[in-house]
Amino acid sequence: MKGYYNDNLLLTQSPHSATYGYVVSPATEFAGKTERLEVSGKAALDFVDYYGGETTRFTNIFLPITARYRAERDEWGFTGGFTRDNTLMGELQTTGVVLRFTQRNLWTINPTWTRMLTEKLSFQGTFQFNEASYEDGLRLGLLDYRIYGGSAGFLYHITEQDDVLLSGTYTNFSTSNAPFGLQASFPGVMLTVNHAFTESLKGTAYGGPRLISSTSRFAGGELTTQDSIWVFGAGLTKQFESASIQTTISREVFPSGFGLLLQTDRVGLAASYKLSETVTAFVGTSAYIVSGATTRAQGGSLPNQKLFFTTPSVAWKFSEWWKAEASYTYGWREIENFGAPVMANTVMLTLTYYPPKMAISN
Image (cartoon, rainbow, N blue to C red; front, side, top):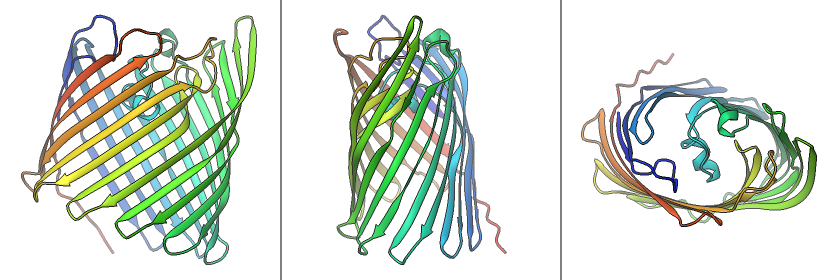
């Protein structure tokens, strides 16, 4: 159960009141495996009640599933499931853009196939399908969208510390519930390098071009554009005896409920430190610079915007089955040519109960 307070939930410049409330989150996890097959999943709910500035009640649903099957030279995998969350939860943290506050339904299907060609060389293929819809979306200016695509490439295991993956990718994005809309495709090439400096220090880097071809349809005609964007990313993870730290930097292209593709530049830092056997401190920080990678389906472009979040927290596992956590989040948002930046402060207190785990073997 979570107690919640936020003095500017929508990060808005308009007059507003603080929002407070509580969240009750029951969940169950399951996992099973044989010599060749592994399956795991989760079923979780959030019963949310907000009061004050945003008085509302809603239910989030999380139903992820993961599966993997190994043969002698082949491995098939699957990740996907169904998520019902709100736009200030999932989409904001991914894209860095604040949408109208409403519920989002997201279906995800991602099968994979890996074929070992030699001891060091393998072929990897993936398929992607996402479908997102928004509750009362058209009234709020949000458009449902669908994504499908995939990638295929070769992974070479150079040494025990180094892997290189070269792949070709293709993604198709289209809006699906309005007389005006956007359809875009962006093929590309990606090079990924993984390197283990030591057992406790690991890094990864990737990059490649995306060629974006998009057609926006609106009343009176349509607009076709072509552009190219380099996407890239790098991450470094260091594990200490009582602490860990992870840094990331990336530029990605993401779909948005605004009916366009976004270019999101992000820098992130996450660090944890075990103060004692029962107390752990954590801090997570993310900074975003967001611009439109395509024009809006309704016409016009998205103004550039910046977003910053930092969240320190302390967790105390005061018994075998109970944990208490306190966190504070500072948020900052600036939109180009929209006046002064806005800020938000959030406090959350969480109490978690972990029931005994059941295990069956044969």
